[in-house]
Image (cartoon, rainbow over all chains, first blue to last red; front, side, top):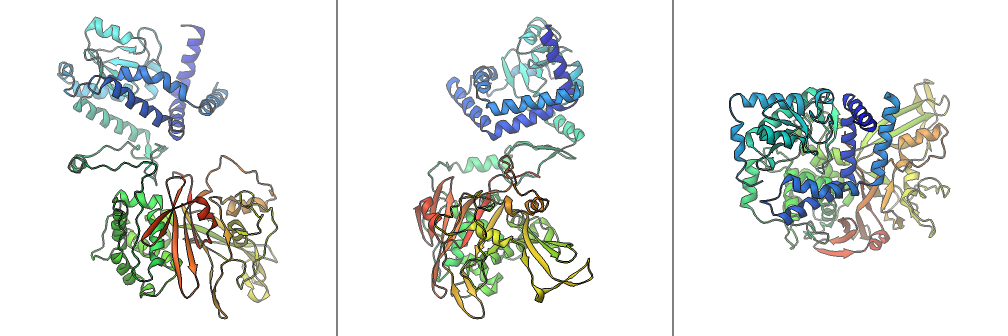
Length: 94
Length: 519
C-alpha cells in the first residue's frame, strides 16, 4: 500500500474508533438533505429505473449511473464544512 | 430484482443459519469498534471499498474492486453481506436480494444495537424528516413503512391528489351564517397554519371526550372538508354551535371581535386537547398539546427597582401579542429612527408610516411606573419606584400580533384606522430577552448572526377589518405555497397580490417560524 493509502487508512481508523466518522456521516446526511441533494438523487434514481425497467434494474445499475452525478452535485459549502471538521478533529487528536 | 425473489438463498437457510446471521449483523454490521480493527479486505487490506463479508465462510473483501466476486466464483459461495448497510447480495442473481426472513433479522439486530448505543429519536414537530440522533435511551428514528392495514386502505382508495405548484387544494370558502365573518376569518387562518394542518391531516387527535362536543374533533372534520378538494363553500354550522356551547360570551348573532374568537377558540382547543395526553388539567403551564406546541410563547417581565437596581423577573405564557397604535388614547412615543429592528426587517420609514417593528419596540421598551405605582422591592424591603420591561423569553412557532384598533375606554369606543406597515419576513432577535441582556452588558452593536435562524418568521395570514366599530366585516389574506396569496371573504376566495396584502390595514398578523428546531 502506498504512503498515501496508509495514511488514509490510519485517519479512517482513528475517525471510526472515536465515533467521529458516525458523527460526520450524520452531519453530512443532514446537510445533504437540507440542500435538496437527497431529493435530486431520488429523482435521478427514478429516471434510471424508468429507463431500465423495474423488473430488470439492479442496484449496480443505479450505483453506476448516479455515483458520478451525486459526486458532482455536492455543494461546495458542504464539502468545505466537512473538510474543516475533519481538519479540526485531526488537529485535536493527532 | 425480479419480484419472484432469489432462489439461491435456500441453499443458505440450513442448520443454524438464523443464529449465524445474527452474529454477523451484531459483530460486523451494526457495530463500530470492531469494524475499525478487523474489517478489512482479505485481499488488499483496504476497508472502505464497499466491504462485504461472505456468508458461507469468514472472508471479507472489497466489492468495488471485485475482490469479493473472485472469492464467490472460486469458492462457489453465492451470498455476501454489505457491511455498511446490511444488504444481502447474491452473485448468481447479480443483485441485492430482499429475503423477508433475513430482513427481519437485520432489523431486529439493528434495533438492539441502537438500544445499546443509546440512540433516541429527536422529538419532531414537523413530519418533514431529517433524522437526528441524540444520546439517550430508546430507538433511533426510522423511516415510515406502511402497515398492512394502511396498504389495504391505499388499495381500496386508489384516488390520489397531486399537489402541484398551482393547485388550490386547501382553499375553500365559508358561508356567513349571520355576522359570523369574525369566526370565518379565524378559521381560514387556522386551516392554513402549516403545523396545525399537518397535525390534523395525519389524524393525530385521539379523542377521549365522551360527548359529541369535542372542538378538536370538529377542527379535524373542518380540515378534512378544506382539503377534500370540494370547491363549494363549506357551511360551518356545527363549528358555530360548538363555539356557542363552549364560549358563551361569543354566542348570539351580533358581530364579535375576531381576536376574542381566536383566543377563545385556542383556549377551548387547548382544554379539549389536554384529554389527549392523559395529563391532568391541573397545570396549565406544562401542557404539551398541539396548541401549546404551536402557539404558546413566554413573555418575560422584568421589574427593576430604581433604588437598589434589583430585578424581579416573571415569565408568563402568551398566545398573542397585543400592540398599541399611535392615535389611541395611550400615548405612543415614537422612538428614534434607525434603531435596531426597522433596518433589520427592511421596513421603510419613507412614508412616515408606523411599522410593526415600531409597535414591537414600543411594546418592549422600559416603562417607568411612576410614583403612584410603587412596587414592593424585595431588595430594599420597601415600596420604591421602578421600571418595567417586557421582552420575549421564548418565541412560539406561530406568532400572532394583534393590532389594537378597537378602543373601548371609558370615554369613547372607536376604531383606529392608522395604517401599520408590516413585513413579509420578520426577525424577532431585537425583542428577545437575550438581546436585552447583551444590550445591558454594553454590547450595543449586535453583530447580526446570519447563521442564527431561530428568530426569523414569515407572514402567512393577515386578518383585516373593514368598516366601523358598529358595523364591519372581517376578511383574511392567506398564503398558499411560497408566494401565492388568496383573499378569503366568507364564501368568496380570490387571488391576491403580495402588494394587496402589504397595503392592507392589518388587524391580526400571523407569522410562522422559518426554521423549526428539534429538541
